Image (cartoon, rainbow, N blue to C red; front, side, top):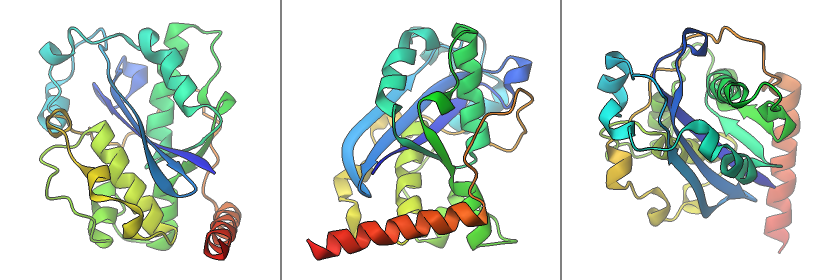
Length: 232
């Protein structure tokens, strides 16, 4: 079972208002274990980053000037995620922004659901902890995941944290992560994630939402995988 944990950083909250993706971070899980394969790219958004966003993620306009534009990294990104289950916290935000970028490259391009299925960990957290705060920070604190090295958020760092949170929410163990898997690079420390609270005003993306039936099926699949691993 191949899964890609993804997070993005953006110039603002709404692609409908011209906001763009400036960072994508992905980590790979195979059979619930980190493989060390990652996709991480800063992107020139061809517009200015809002000051409010910079205050949170620390990614400046000057830093992005020499970075590739989205069309330059699209093929490599799609090749990395193709055929996997894409896992995101508030998938509507990340998937919505990436689909917007894909269409800006060419209206003939297919959206992400042509390449992957999508699982939303925010929906999972809300089901497990109704009525509580379920941001990535809140989930990490609930599961005692170390956030001490997180001076600022960043797409790759947040993807790494989400991978651990996802494993713990679905019955995984912290020992599945070696310490080096969560080492925070200097580049990662200088980036942060913009608040992902706004709705996406665009054509709805086909996302596999974590409703009750799907969560039960997902849990059953994880149980089968665990039994297989224990029997080896």
